[in-house]
Length: 324
Picture: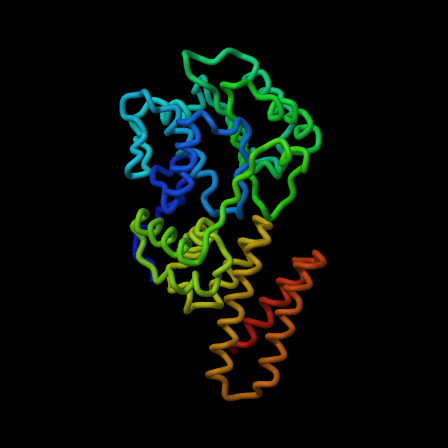
């Protein structure tokens, strides 16, 4: 059961001051940089929500704030929010840092954004430092923007570093991958458990996180955190009040069209029917038939992109009648 205030929101990677369970990756990048062996074009690959962007912002802050007052706190893997680089990056005014990420109103990263990046790269570095370009959600680069980017990442200036972040469940042009040094980010179930535990503690949230982890062992801590907080608004035990959670997630999916939500919907439907079958004193055949029918419809919707509106209307109707 979650016990915390209702105003809590997930912090964006740019403002996530603590980095959890990435010591080995962090030390690797620091050593490469200090030995002047860090590749100029880097591709960070892994599932969405695993912490790639958070890691990237921490590396960026470490590098840019090295000679500043209130520099990055390496022993604690923590950004000091008083350092100048952190404040300038947040204000989008850092002279040696350029960010491209998805505009919330558009799926594609447009060629205009890449052209602005090229102008940034062509300018002299401010001071005696170096420049860093970060591209988040690179899988959303369209063909034109990808092609415009190729030459820069193939022949970068010695003092310019590209950090490109890619959701490995989606495709990216092979020509981009071939021009970068790829670092694949993977976390096993133990790491995920520790990361989610630390994140929830950081948000001052008390929940039995074994339940979502045991049932969504394939999911990333960031995605689990997102849906734990989304379901929190129900103000009930999200893992006991399955029907309320199912309807909430259906409405959430219809708004956001996030395919990952379908896995959560399927999970709560399964728990709903498990409880129903254990406590049902009528015809179990009908109950089991309804469960199989709903499961098949969701799977077909995933596979064939069927009419979601009619499918969800039918599912809600079946589930509501089960409780009468």
